[in-house]
Length: 321
Image (tube, rainbow, N blue to C red; front, side):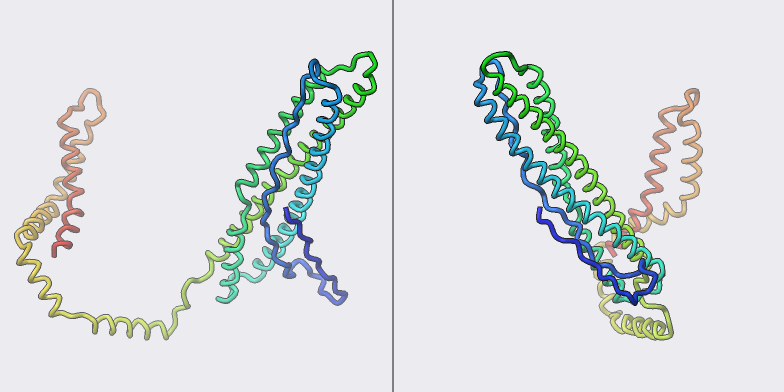
């Protein structure tokens, strides 16, 4: 992760007492995905493995784990600094918007849209959180594996007691490093999720304020003049001769189908009340065990179909015309 320094805020002696409304430098809440998980600790069986090989393997694992802990701590510190700065920016910006109210200019609204788009582009990536969870799972497995290895690798008396003591010390240090790594990853995970929630709250704040901004100019005397000119232009663009010719040609080509559809539509409109009453009468026995019959259901389906056909026939008639 590339760490950047938090922007320094200058303190002016002649500054106003109300500092919460000040404009703060914009924070970029974008975290880079860390390096891959450290290599898995390879623990040989203590019964058949050479003690020198075990010591060398444990020393290498301890060095790698300490480097991983240091990297996770650096990532955690940077994420915490970004979260703190973003929270301060959110509170300051929320206060400024609250005092400004809805009386915002169009250029200010454009700047709000620009900030919202930037936050949407720089949201916390899902693969970052998944990577932290994967590292946590691997570290917990290694912690359990170390505990099992310590249980079976008891130092025994003999000439190799010094090497065995050194191995036990390496095991304890490695176990401590793994535990520190788990704690750092837990804190990093909580910080990243909190940062993600803060970014979503920030986006929601901007969306709520943009929702209440007017999307059109205020209606005034010039609006009436514009409507008159628009209506005048629309009427001037009408070609009644072309419309009449198109209707005549459509009737000559599809006159019989159009007339049949129009007749069916008229019949359904006239009989609508009767069909609706029939539907209500047939629907009452439906669901009653003692009175329900298949015929009632079929009649109800047919009446529903006839009521729904009116809209379809109307659109079909308009399409053919």
